[in-house]
Length: 432
Image (cartoon, rainbow, N blue to C red; front, side, top):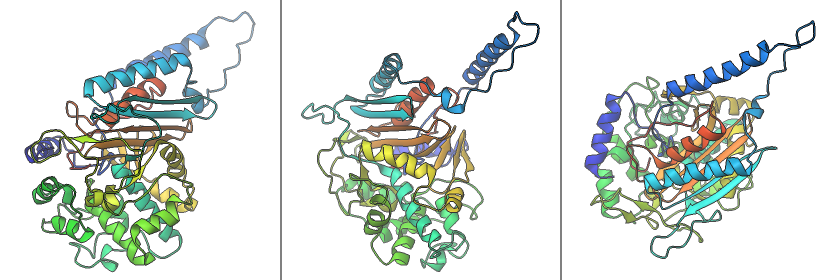
């Protein structure tokens, strides 16, 4: 978005009491509307009426019929029948048309309920090539889930402590003797978000193929005063993840990309997920379109260098891998139970949203979203139903102040999990 748009969005968010979150709660945060209380009340009232009707129905026997056993939570998730698939198709196409999204890929599944895997629209405006489920995509702030997993593995190994101050590992951080690794991971450090700095935005959009180093990114942040005392409030901030990435490098002794590949990606069984060191983008991939440009006009951002997102937003993946990663992340396969429990301790962050250690909980859906110029993604898991939802699209252009990834997430969950509708306020962060 233009600098003016970002400033206006930031002021609007501040006025509403919102500070930058993702997708994906990300450099990525998701989007827009809070859940409609009236709609929730209506659903609840309808459910209550149904229960009352069942219980009060006359029975011929002289003794009351036994109360039915409660329906398991997993049964709230519907079978993904052709009729449900048609509903989903219609809802997704509606969002795609209204938000002018070139192409989108969706996967939805739950054990015993079937699966829904679809692609809509085009992957390349120049050629008209169709979007397809097997394409590689940039995943923005979903990178945070990999970086924090790497950090938590080091916690499990006793090499770092969540309540260690960042100053123990990295010199020169404002309030570095007070800010803990935990506060960095839960977005409560008080450090300024480098991707909201006007100088950074100008540097990125004037030469989007240039590389940035982690130290350059931190410099954009550290020239600003801290915003609040550590732990005082929630503020989504990419700076936090740059610092955590540097901690992983320092403690492990190897580059972050190599550590994540060796200790996270491969053990998780992911075959098409990588942390690029430059602008490389494996084929086949979709082209991505953004208006976060120097002119404000829409451009093809496919080959922009994502190094500016580094530990906060640089990674690439595909639909199959993210479907697998959703459960690995939410259930803690790569961590001890105790450390996973620390990750999932969410703190109120935004309306209807809690944020843990590099992970959010939106109305029961656990995971993260991602956004950077040209791409957005959403990967979430609903434990009650063991349901997985992944959405990947090739634009980050907002629609009426809402992130398109959240619009898709909301439209889909309104159909399949009306008691757990995915909603996430949009965040005014470059690259979310």
